[in-house]
Length: 24
Image (cartoon, rainbow, N blue to C red; front, side, top):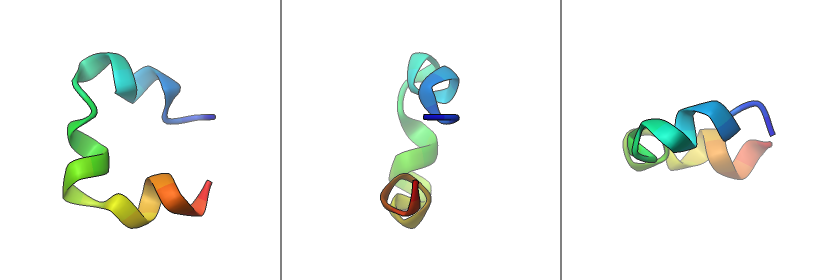
């Protein structure tokens, strides 16, 4: 997934916007 790179940051994007991770 495109958020794979963000996952390395600390999976914080998913915490702020769980919809983003669920969408893709």
